[in-house]
Image (cartoon, rainbow over all chains, first blue to last red; front, side, top):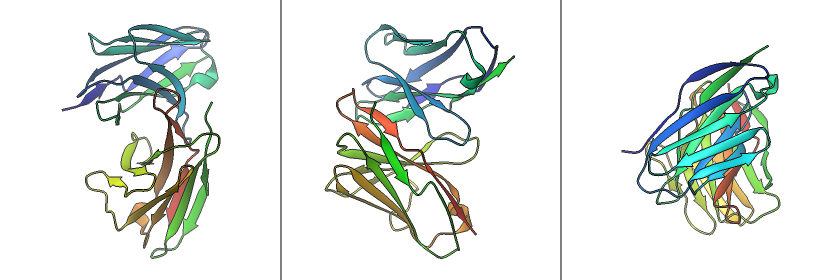
Length: 109
Length: 116
């Protein structure tokens, strides 16, 4: 079956760095996405990785290793507004998105 | 980035009535749109994939006659919740796939439905 695993919840301190991991097993691979979802709001697109390596976008970076079925989202210089759920999703061979359950990130002052 | 709008943002209706939710891609054409629902503190659940000009593809367990989907143009898909009941109360979110950006899905702001 298809499976996306990510931690349920993480806690970090304002100004610090946090890494949210995602492992996946899917039928085919057409890219991995990270979305941010604040409570009560719809998800917003953060990043897309289809090739191995690191994609940096401001304070956020996303890494992909296709051979390991692994990705991480790295958030630097954490701000209180970064408190949200972070969703990992993989596009399978049918171009369907398979969603992880999300990681709730709690930022403490 | 691509913008997707959704209307209404919030609706309260009586049990037994029907509710229509619109999803529009504002600055790109979307041959494929998706409808999700999300219960509080739960992950997104894909309900159906909406393809322009053809019938929607529903996920297992989602009633086609209950959740009517129409994708009449490249920028508009509608979801109609027919004969709504309190258990249909949820957060409904649409997304549209932008083929220009690696098949990225961009989400609308969501519609919060409360059925009394």
